[in-house]
Length: 370
Image 1 (cartoon, rainbow, N blue to C red):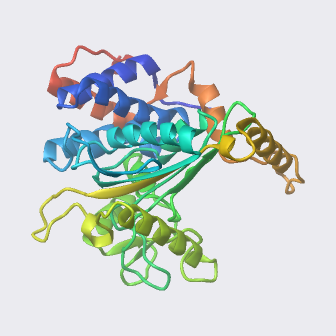
Image 2: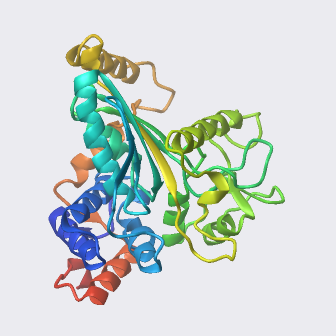
């Protein structure tokens, strides 16, 4: 695996981001949660949601006033197995952390638990929340709505968010089966990554309002905001490649994210008000935790799950292919590669780090400055 970008040690990047979040008003314990969620993306190699988003999605939004640094969580409704929270436009990562802690404890007692959050903000990598459950030997499920990006099948208007539907299932291996992906053919964060790296978006992933394919990443990001471009749903455009499946799953996530929490949805989540000014996002998330001990036991579940993924990997391979992967395997191998090296940071992220450091006057020095 060749990596030409410089690495920043994990501890150094963690300490820097914690101090940076604190510098912008995020309380100490909350800053630690936020930094860990972002770094977990980079540990897994999912760079579209890691340090790449530290400044543009979180710090810049705090500065603009569309994300509140202090998260005032309110429990709207609670039963022995459910809870609904209002994040009041605070840090979505912080709200989600406290939600999962509560649901895991409920599931240990009652076998299952579910929750929803309204008036939230971007909650980072969805797999972080499901992995909190799998680390406890439980099944984790989550989804979130987002700014409208996906066009419905046979449509060209961005109506639904990239709306990930995510599962983590514990196995008897060193890592869980973790399926964490958007219900669009590509997520907005990936296009942001392409733009920051000066790369085009592959043809066929984005359509304009007149039905033309778009590949200019910078242009796509602008047109997604002004509503003249949309992402294709998982599967592709129309029904020939079964794009209606991705469209359907995206709608499921939209409904559960909004209806379970009594929150907002679709065009109300643009982050722009009627006058075109930046506004709060009011996102919704949902979470479920299932304890296999309430069924046939955690160890039995983990053994069967492990057997299934091992059999899949050992199945007959296509000509020229030497491996079959299961969800979570590549991410685990990325962590093994990066754990002793650190976080790889490209030029755009380096500039963000220096800008935030110098703005706050933080006493950090990085090797990439040499």
